[in-house]
Length: 428
Ligand code: NAD
Image 1: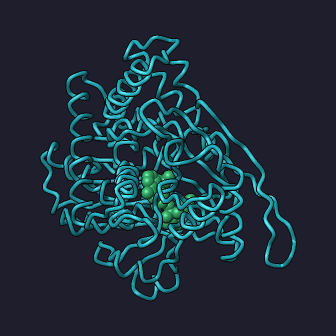
Image 2 (image 1 turned 120 degrees about the vertical axis):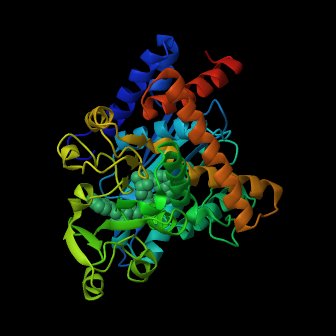
């Protein structure tokens, strides 16, 4: 839960709103309002100093009518069951809107991975799989990296699963390292996917992308590639990115000429997306309060860190210049902020459309694992662009046809596809 926002209540409120618009049968709606299965478990881990720590783990499987469940595993100190429920629900809508044959799930552990040594992290990852291996698998539920987890961790998890089932099973998990069953392009996929949707939104709004400025929250896997893509694919400028320095303080950085250099910042950023403040300052970057990103003079705002970040308390700080909000993170906008966007004509690219590039590329990874034949990075990114562009236009078309907000349109496209799959399978 972030502040006073309960993400699962938010996910249910968004769903209820669209279920009403769709005139959805209340009995079918009841199936979709809640996850189908939830697992909570304790993971004892032997620490390097010989002591034992017990971590709380979660896995929530929301709906697998369209195919095996799919969703990341987050390692975060503020993880909650409701957070995981919300994210699992959004995964169902995300896979449906991207039109990939997968359902929705999410997992997590309450932990700050930066406080663990490499061997402790490995034991925690293996412990997570020891709890869940009977309920995951290439045809059941396929995890992936997310906040606080890395390709190396996915490699350990895949290895543990393969040992437990007695056969090499790369398809149990995606986001694996290259050479260990991973796909080229996966690292960039979510951030670049965000940019493909922003590019289409700019065409729709008749904006000249070369004259645009973006302000972003986060500098992790999503935002760093979104920043690179915004500059290199669209020709725009990125005024700022922000991060969390692990002391509950957020750093915000931008260079004197108004544009950050993501390639430089990456050289001073750790594996968790924390920029080295001292080195950034020395290089001429200004470090501000972490929330300053939201009030920047920008055409595009990109919340790419956590949920609930644009809310009733801060939405009015958004500059009048902002035309597009591209939701790189999951659930970054609260319903109150949505109302503000609607009133002020801000074009929202909703999370489960905007950041669907990651899961789409994960799906490509599974397909390549099944074929045991791997595509080039260019092939992967070209296929990704095609899928993201099609998804964007399916939602835009629905939004224009039904005269509804983009988030509602994305829900309408997704719910319709999931309900049809449930009906085809005779569930409802
Ligand atoms: P990450 O762990 O790589 O990076 C997170 C970034 O957010 C870091 O830079 C961190 O410093 C920053 N951050 C954390 N707390 C913050 C705070 N309070 N204020 C400002 N910055 C803060 O995570 P990621 O993979 O980039 O994921 C970011 C978001 O995107 C999450 O909501 C995640 O669920 C979503 N997402 C990720 C993927 C993916 O493929 N990685 C796909 C879809 C959605």
